[in-house]
Image: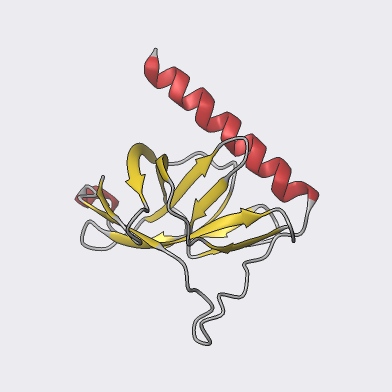
Length: 150
């Protein structure tokens, strides 16, 4: 029953994100670092089962006021390019939705939330695609870029 509730909450979050994406043109912000365009936090995930090596991972957190997504990049067509899993781990750039200019920016906040980690077979997915595997983890950005275990 708890798993069904979590799945329902997750799907509601995905729907909310899809509505946000669907009503605006979304692009990643200019990280301002002068290099690869990313200057926010990352989330390192370790302990991912070996069966998922070579697959792709994303991280999601949604509530009434925050949309935070971990992906290699976020596109304007309700899709994201994901990070490849290798050796049972991945380092995921984290973005937050900035309502002021309707875009995703590198995340530099200090929130502590429960994120849903999703694994997909494809490197590019729609926000509403069903993952091959999913796991909820507690993430604390209070000290910067945290590490979590699958």
